[in-house]
Every structure is written in structure tokens, then in C-alpha cells.
Image (cartoon, rainbow, N blue to C red; front, side, top):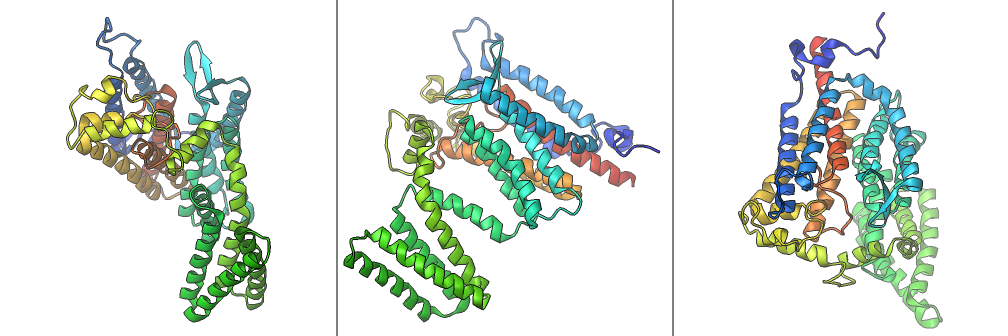
Length: 482
């Protein structure tokens, strides 16, 4: 009797014994194309005309070429493995990943304020890039276990702990941007059917955290009061009664502020607190979840918003400045805003079709810092223009959609969850990285997948994608055999 974990030659070598018989050639082609684009961009961003040799390994593009070769060798090995190997390997990989993060916290090298790197003989490796793979595998293993139900409290806690444990360590390393990537797994939970009563509060928390830096607490609570009142009014159809309720609450808060030494904020909180207690009691007696849900969300906002200032003070000064400049509360064109300003100038100067390969002045003359790493998209925008940037963005979206399609095609939970995890990670990286280069997102210091210079990043994204392709190919083989 053969063990269920043995690697079958048919599943490993595809249809008709061919290694790439069932490999998704579209996904593989998009991956290769993006790596090629990355090599071209890194060459343009780091080429030194005064160098003695264009093939010198002092050039970043030559170092990246070596990592491309390593990544492709690793890809070949991963494609040879049976999908059941990844299922078995999920727990050990996750444990090793957590240990690496803890070791980096103690023995790691600090770079740009983040103690998130190991350095060996001048070569740096960032463990968090590989922890994303381990966390994705672990999420797939946990969420594909027998009788798992995302809406059962104990199962939800298991899935949440898989994300929160590495996230907490990464935050302690002061690498918050990389840690936030793990929050993209909320998208995976949504795909697996998480209830809106769990998913919505997570999004609501992010919303409150952002607006707390833009508006005063009084403005936020008045807006929420109006919004939630309008919601229940639409649901019940009792518009007049809700308008009267809203007017009564605001009038009571105004009278309390005028007739007592209390501030307007304190008066509003007292009135809203009393009203919330009354509404909760009424909703429970009437079993009216439609009323209870917005009231509980409002009470949560009353607790969370005042804590945002405390959370903000725990961030590093450069992180605080990035948030403040992003929301428009601080301007520092020659300091914290410099990177983004130069990035926008570079992308805007590219026009419709760009200036041509290695003809970008902002890039060539080093006006854009980190032009070959976090701000590599500036090279695309300046040298290839709007059309080139649009093509690159379309390639990313095609790869992400292809991964999602592969997940649905696999059919079994482990492969589906893993493919969606990879798609979520790629989407978050692309969204944040390109967003920060054009000023739509705060600078977080995360790379653009497959394009940014960096061996750890390239190898990790290669492994992420190739494991997904392998899972899809193996499942296709087995279904074909059956």
C-alpha cells in the first residue's frame, strides 16, 4: 500500500510525462515578463557609464541577474515537487519562519530604522519576505483542515493567530510596512465566506484610524451619528422619527455643553453614551439586530478613536511624519516629502510614451532616491511613459486574476486558499508601492514585486508564485488521471 504522501511520477511530471505538461503557461509567461521588465528597469536605474566594465558585479543589475538565475533554479525544484509536500511542510515552515523573525529581532542588522535583516559577508537577507510564504502555507493548511468553518469562533481565532503572531514580531522589528502585508489575508477570509459582522469591523477600524488624523473627534462622531441614523432610517423607512432622534441628540449635547463647564466633545460623548446604552437595551429586548449592529459600531468608535493618538505616539518619528504628510497635515518638500515629489516629477515628465531607455533625466542624475528599489516604478513612468506604466500595471492585474482563477480551478481548499493568499500579497504590494510613488499612499518601504532590486524579494515572490503554479499543475494532473 502506497503512502498518501508519496510523490507520484504522474503528478510530478504532468500530462504524458512532460515536466511542464500542466503548468499554467499564462501565469508562467507573465512572471517571466515581469522579471524581464524588472531587469531592464534596474539596468536603467543603476547603470554607470564611467564603469570600467558593464559586466562588473559592482552593478546592481549584474547582482540581480545572479538572483534571477538562483530564483529560476529554485522554480525548477518547486515545480518538480508534489503538492502534498507543501501541505506537510506548512507547519515546519511556519515554525521556522517565526524563529527567524525572533532571531532577527535579537541578532539582526538595523537598516533604515528596522531591525529586520540578516547580513552575511556583505549580503543582506530579509526573513520577512520568506515568512510571507510560510504564513500563506499555514493559512492554507489551517483553513483547509477538516470541518473548518471561518465563522466558528474557535476556527476564526486559529486563522487570526496565524496572521497576528508574525505581524506582532514584525511590528516589534519596526518594519510596520512589511507587517501590514499580512493584513491582506482578510481578502482571503472574505473569499472563504467570513461573515460581514467580522469583516466589516476590521475595515471600519482602518477607516477610523485614518480619519482620526484628518478630522477632530467631534467631527468624526457627528458624521458617524448621521451615517448610522441614515442607515437605520433607510432600512426601516421611518425617516421622520430618525430625523427627530438625530436632532434631539445633537440638541441635548449642545445644551449640556452650554449649561455646564464640559467641552463640546465631552458633552457629545456623554449624551451619545447614554443614548447608546438605551438603544442597546431596546435592541436586545426587541431582538432588532438591524438597530443593534450600528449602535455597537458607534460604541466601538467611541472607544477606539481616543486611543488613536496613543497608538500614533508609539510609531517612529519618520512613520509619524509620513502619515502626517500623506493626510496633508504637514509639508516638508525638502525632507520627508522629497522622495514622493521627485517621484511624481519623474513619472509626470515621461508623458504618454516616455523618454526612452536610459534617457530619463530624473533617474540618471539621481534626483529620485531608492530609484532601483522602492521607487522602481519611477523608471517605468519616466522612460516608458503612461502607456508603458499602463502595460506593466495590466501585467500585474493579469497575473493576480490568473492566480485567483487557478485557485478556483484547483477546487480543493488548500490550493484555493494558498492561491488567493498569493494574489492578496501581490495586490497589496502593487497597490501600496505604485500608490506611494504617485502620492496616493504613504511611503511604507515595500518593494514592487519582481521589479524592485533585491535578492530576498525576488526569490520570495518567485517561490510564492511557483508554489501556486505547482499546486495548480499537480491538481490538474491528478484530475486528468482520475
